[in-house]
Image 1 (cartoon, rainbow, N blue to C red):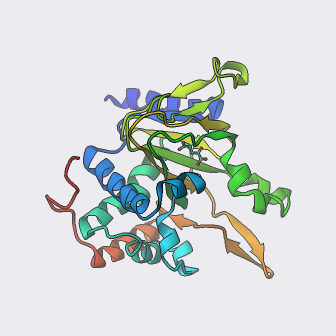
Image 2: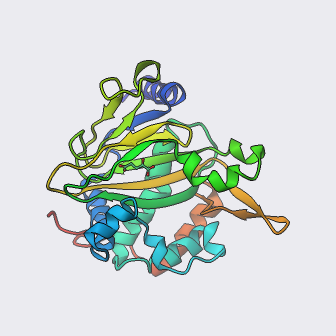
Length: 279
Ligand SMILES: O=C(O)CCC(=O)C(=O)O
C-alpha cells in the first residue's frame, strides 16, 4: 500500500473509533496464531463441565490457575514467567501467545487509538458452547469491570481502556456475534449492527462503548480471545498507596521489550511443528 493510502486508512480507523467507539480490523492474526489460541481455549474449557462454562458467563481465565504476584501485575518478564505455567503450552506456542499479547494486538490498537504507550489490563477467553443460550445484554465493559473503582470517586471514572475481541471462529448472528447500536444509537434488533467476523479478525472497542452479544444456536462452540489495554495504568487506592487493578504491563516501551526479551531465555523461537495441527 502507498504511504498516502496507509495514512488514509489509519485516519479512517481512528475516526471510526472516535465516532462509533468500535472498529473491525480484518486478518490481524494468521492461521497458526488462531490455532494456538483455540487450543489453549479448548484446554481451559475441557477442565470444566459444559454447564459450568455457561454459569461462569462463558469466561475462561488462564491466570485463574496460577499464583498471581504483585510483581507480575506490572512487569512483562514476571508476567510471562507466571503465565507460562497456566496451561500446558509448549515453548513455541508460548512465544506465539506473548507476541500476540504484547506486539500484534497493541500494534493493531495503536493504528486506531493515539497513545505513546499501551498497558495490558486483562486477558481471557469467551467461549460460548454449542447450543448455548448464554447472551451478554447491552453493557459497557468499564461499568462492569471498573464498578468497584468508580465507586471510589469521579477521578477514577475517567479511566478508559480498549478491548481487542479476537474471533477464533467465524462469527455471525447465528453463533453469538457482537452487536453495537445502529444509527442514532438504535438498540432495537432491527436497527443494531451485527458484526460478522472471520477467525483472526479483531473487533476493537472502548470501555465506554455499548455492546451486546447473542446466543450460540449452532452445533459448534464459538470462541473468542479478549485482550484489553489501557493508555495509563489503572490503579485503585489501597492503604494510603495506589495498587494496580488487574494488570498494567507496558507493551511498547524499550524497557518492556527488554524485559520480554529476557523471558525468551525460558522460551525459544517458534519452530515448524510447534503449533497445533489444523483440526
Ligand atoms: O464474546 C462475547 O460474546 C461478548 C463478550 C462481552 O461482551 C464481554 O465480555 O464484555
